[in-house]
Structure formats: structure tokens, C-alpha cells
Length: 260
Image (cartoon, rainbow, N blue to C red):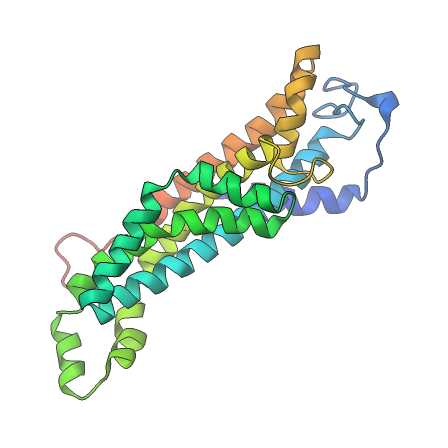
């Protein structure tokens, strides 16, 4: 959690303190030390500042993807468990159909249709990652909807919408929060891959994917730092988020033997 907080603070503080950078080709591909803490890229930008800017954009896109995917999955799973019957069966077949599609290929097609648009990247990731959330929410609610307190609410005259809004939705809020955080590193990797393959953000906009894409040619000239610095930022961030998910699951899990 401390690492994740430090990463987020760096993505905010470093670009704000550095201000706008201008390309300086006289300082292109300087190694760490002569070219600052992390060296410079092929345009003469300070790579540490450029990586912080790219990580900020990647985190913002990944957070939007995680929130949208969780919202779609929560709505589908809650509706399937609440309505049941044919709607439940149809929703699960839709989930199976989306899961059968290769996510990366679908993401490439959607992102390529509106190349360079952040909304296209968000849509390409969110529309392929919500089924996992829908399954988790539905499975959790199938047991909850037959609980005694749900039956009591129905006998008291509560309708489907009231039960779903005031009883079922709060019961899966914790699971949805964990699912959203789990999706965050997946979204970071997918955004990076899309930008690396050239169908994500435009090369003039810094993101981890565009920085790694630019490093493909630079590393062949011996400029290893152009690949290592953004690559380490990606790995550290993904590992920190994944570890935070484990901690959140352990904290949110009910103690063994406790009656809720």
C-alpha cells in the first residue's frame, strides 16, 4: 500500500514540479547520470519525468476501465440474480459469449477503429472484462437472496427493486470493490499492450505503452535505460496493486467461526 501511494504521489508531484518539457535533440539518449536520474529518450526528454507522466495517464485510463467494467458487471450480475428465470439464463449465456472472445483481439479491433482516442481504449478494455465481475456478483447473490432476512423483507411487502437496492446491492459492495481493484493491473497491462502495438494513444502522448514502443528502436542502439525505466515502473505498479488486493481480501474476509 505504501508503494502504491508513493507511485500515485510521484505521478502527481513530478510532472507538476517539472512543468512542460521541450524536446532537446542535443541531449538525446543520454545515459543515467549525464542525462539526469534516469537518462533521456530519443527526443531529449528527461526519462524520469516522462515515465511519471506516462504512468499517470496509464493509471487514469486503467482506473476508468476498472470502474466501468465493475459497474457493468455489477448491473448484469445484480439484475440476473434479482430477476432470475429466463433473464438469468440469457445473462449467463451473454457472459459465456463474451468470455469466449479473445480479449486482446477484440480490444485491438475497437481501439483501431478510433486510433489514439482514450475513450476507445477504455471501451475496448471495459467491454471485455466485465463478465468476471458479473459472475462473482451473481454467485454471491444466489445464496443471499434465499436468506431469512430477504424472505422477511418480501413477506413485509418489499418489491424486487426495494430488495435489490436496499439488501442485495449492499451485500456485494465489498466484493465489487475487490473486483474493481483486481481489474486495475489487468487494465494497466492491456493499455500498455495496445499502445505498444500502435493502436492505443498517439506517440506524442506519454504512456507506459508509447514509451515502451519507442524503446524498441532505442534499445538496439545501446540505450537500455529507455526500456528498463518505464518497464520497471509498469512492473512495480502492477505488483503493488496486486499485493494491495491480497491485503484487502484478507482484511475484508469475515473471521472464521463468526456468525454474520
